[in-house]
Figure 1 (cartoon, one colour):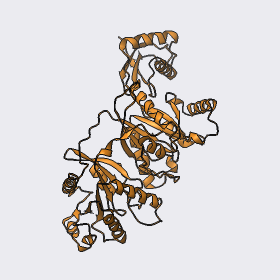
Figure 2 (tube, one colour):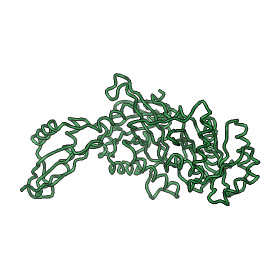
Figure 3 (cartoon, rainbow, N blue to C red):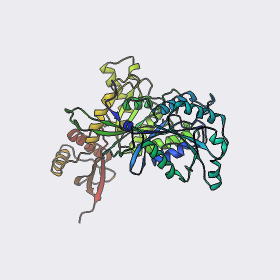
Length: 466
């Protein structure tokens, strides 16, 4: 089944950044989108999948695409896929910014690319980047650049920001004459969802299926995805849905680089990618934790599960590649769930869904799970209901002693926060409660009030009574 979501930025004009490797496209992308999503590196082929984001100027938005640097060389891994991603960007673009390094000489690859752009017959602005000084700006008017046949270069410095305002003014003037024009997009209450997992479990395939477009490269090469890719979609659940029925909801999906043990991480690019993946988890409201149905749970999976323990995010466990499973019976599904919860006991609150990102099996069912988890994460239990609940819970099972010798005396139980739900259990200062009792109370809270997909945090607070 196709995705029930729609990509939000599709009604905006699109500007594509193209050029050979190491001319500063990713730095320029980060400046325009006011993010640090694109990894900046001197390594050829750093950017593989096209980065797509929203840029803003004078209060209005346009769609910006950062493409991989072209080398036209088979020596760069995934060069064919990078070229394909660039071709897609050129097809989608309303305006192309051809980025060159003004401090370097004109290279054959740039002549080749300029020839391609002229055939493309779409408007092109020649941008002379790294014009970091007056002398460098003067280099932009060197005759060689004019030989490209793309007009007079616009000198800028993506690093310092010099000339970017003038460039954006020209961009907006061009876009203002096109059928799609920049406009203000201010979606409210965006649900941020990070797609995480170890390398090669199918995160990028799932991301593409959820947004309904092949935006990121899918490959068996480990660490193909190097940087987070955000895509904002709108989703309107059916009228009869219990959670936000008929109401348009905005979801930002973030595809992340595969995270593995520090000892397994190689090179600065992978370290940066893993760091950005962890940042994506921190920025998210909830996490789709993807595991491979046809591979035993590994230490890397368990390390990721441990990482989620440190964050207070709602979690949905996505068992991918279920189409390749030899046994699709309910019995085997239940056995698989039991094994997963046994490996991740701290994620016993997370629902498990079995999908195939490759053929779309049940991927559309992830959306209602996300909305339910988002709604129940924000539950605030009325004080009188919480008081009655806790009296009944203590009556059924009195608290066990912790490290102290005195039997614990509980003085109060209150909800102090929601999104995520946090409760505070007040106990007499010279007593202590065993951690298992807090877990017991959390389980009873979940039975009574659900908190679907969300961790429940119970803090112990000692009070000295006079």
